[in-house]
Length: 347
Ligand code: NAD
Image 1 (spheres, rainbow, N blue to C red):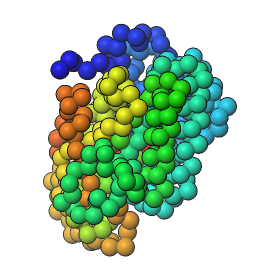
Image 2: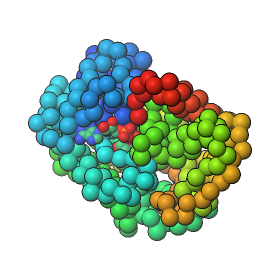
Image 3: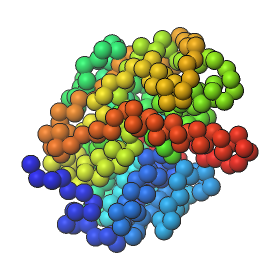
């Protein structure tokens, strides 16, 4: 198998071609802007609707614009002159958010439909869409010892209400813009992404960040308890952010993956109880677990089948969860202490 192309090795992409990243004030978009900057790309345009001081990362030398990408005119401005467009903008969060705000999640369809049209009209060469494992049929995810989900498991469709259906519809837009209009689109279905510079508080955070924060708080306040959503038996796989950005890059530059949804996730299955034990071990504490059975808990189990990505790219996300969580815990602890000292933190 040939080594997969990346932005840095792609023969049709120059270092001064314009790369546009929607949602760059958030976790993955911000990390992607930093990644391309570090690879030597000199023209990166980052866009988010959040005011600039609230962006999780501001990368020096990157053009950073505060615009609402659910408005078509703003998408036109965002995509002007673009060679590649990566859309990571969406109204999203962990289960607590997506179960409660289904309309907000569905309205992200405005961002995707306007961004893809603007990218097409601007003559962009490639468009990337960040889909999700929530697009998969939920009836296949009712057991914690779940069979890992392969790409064909999205159909017959029975996606997660709100958020998952929006992802499925936007995937179809990507497929039809390629089939009918020849815009090269690439679609990755992310499975839970975690790491430094992600949301760790405020209601949109996902399980790894939430558990780290709870352990840090318990340790700091001397409380010996931890509240866990559900009965702790739920299972998931979690992908470290560094794997995510490399995966996005390889998927975007792979000709075999045009308009073809592909899993981008770790295949290391982790139970919520196991996640709590690991965070306790990192923090050096042991807490009494209180299970909140009426809290949002999502599907019983979900894992990524990586057969397809390994066959096409000869690669899969491989950061061990223990290593990624150790780094994430350290970053959240630093944020927690900064906030406690009365200083400003993002997320
Ligand atoms: P995030 O919330 O950190 O970032 C999303 C960003 O989009 C936010 O900064 C938000 O302000 C911005 N945004 C929302 N509406 C906007 C609008 N109208 N105009 C401009 N910006 C807008 O989330 P993330 O974790 O970085 O997720 C990025 C993408 O990956 C999303 O499409 C998400 O659905 C997808 N995804 C993420 C995960 C995960 O575990 N983090 C899993 C599956 C899919």
